[in-house]
Image (cartoon, rainbow, N blue to C red; front, side, top):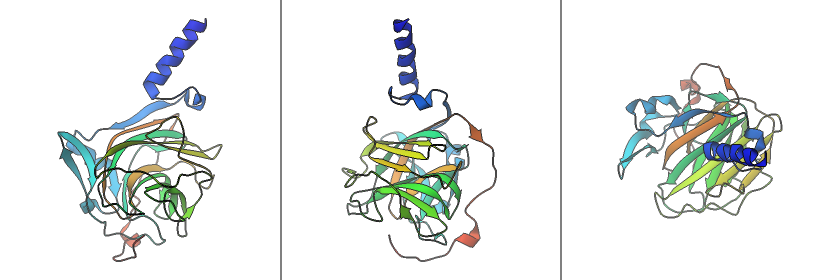
Length: 245
């Protein structure tokens, strides 16, 4: 009996990349994968400014690249450059992505991961930056006001390494418990944790506050996909200008 249990557990870890501590994910299914090999992959996303993004090829591998600054500012202080998946819409989820920062090194050198996205002024995002402060390297809540950090645990900063160095990030979220865990390269120990219940199910996205980078090999697991339609980045929410982070 013990042998059978270990075999089943091994299969679960192999399929989902989960460790034994992640028993909450036993009923999750892989509902979305994207490696950007197909040209139509670009249209899986709703962009704050489509002209700032492209599918690029590097060393024979295709990725989603943020290469410019979006002509976009939301009504409240929050990231400018967002590529938001039109689906799936999820509550509880696990999301993994490979990502590479392509900008110069400085304190706020960042890439962002978005989730629980309701509309342009209501969502969560993870800000992975070189140096942590009140506006960087934290889990943030945008709730009809400028972003507020909510992490109970974070690090002193994220080491992006050389330009275009690839890393793996993962977010684990439980809506009912309010828990948010963020992993970076080390999938055993979270680098950030928060507890918040402002928003339930929402969209997942990728981008940066005001830097550039690449994204690849997206995977999303969830026990349930929520059905909802409609774009989020309306012209009324866009305006030129705005300050840097």
